[in-house]
Length: 81
Image (tube, rainbow, N blue to C red; front, top):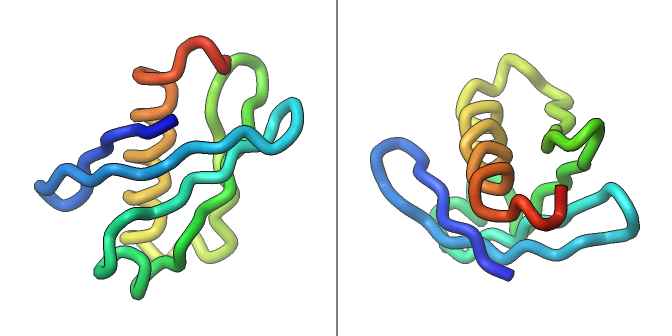
């Protein structure tokens, strides 16, 4: 399954794979974002909402990216919630 999300004024596409009952893996499909954040990001489903763990909350770009992706998952993938 693919999702589309916005980050810093651009639209990106990412792959989404369910890992067990409440875990999701988002695979980034952009060279620039991969270099900055890695090839995949973990998310989880809790109480019918999408969440993420940000180990370094001071990294505002990572937080903004995770927020944008979790919003996109909630809007585009309602069947997995």
